[in-house]
Length: 367
Image 1 (tube, one colour):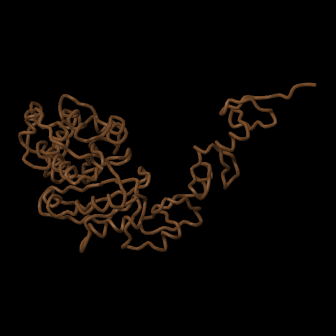
Image 2 (cartoon, one colour; image 1 turned 90 degrees about the vertical axis):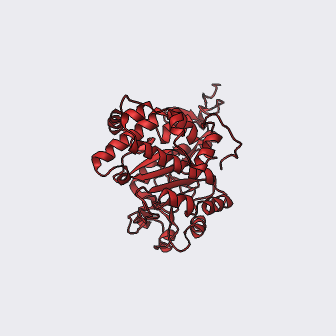
């Protein structure tokens, strides 16, 4: 009597009767392992590995069927059939539930939402902040609660979804002067409410604190703005090690979300290289926007002093780039830069990070 033919399962490594074999690609799997590792696309019935399932908790889909027949709701991230998608003025797809509750006063917007900017404070330089928070839910209810404490009688922030976050929100301020951020912006209320709702920022691998600066504050003409921007990039590259420590980013995070351009001999050389680098917006200082430059180095935080200190640092970098000549900037040391600083929040934070003339202070961990 002949023995039954057998095979070795590519996943569990056990020997099984050939009758229990299921082939996927060039590998053979037993029935138990194939059930564990795969799902059926609910559109075409093809068996796919679970890691290749591009559906959600409600439906399993292969990539081909998703691309052909489905899209994702820009509000709640639910997978929806193209026949069931609704579209508002911003041309982003919505599911039925989000469509029926969608109006100009909703608190959670799609990623591409861009309202007309409202400028707060008197001055020439305006800073717009994008603060990512995660782990508390991609929730319209939570967005509304944060907006309620922040906006009062006038809209100072708005909140968007962001595909780079797992279960989080992106809080975006309208453009504000540094003085307004420090004295009138509702940052303490925002961070308190976010923490109360269970969000984290520093204690995630997904969150950043991005700061936009209007180009018009960097020079009267496009040519003068380019000169200042070149010196901003030169400063960032020259003091990369210090700024990396300031940022609280890991090497992996900085390379993924805010990669450096590389130090060159002159500021103009750094700018020329940056324009050809192909990094796009995922660079330490994003220069692809028409009206702003965007500092992307910093890790997210829900600590009030860290937010204010970060904005003060960005403003000071822009100041030295605007005021100093290339030769002055080339010979300035980190200690020389520190001597220019007067802001209490920034100096305190630099001491916490062991970046201020070796004067450490006790600090609480960021959230």
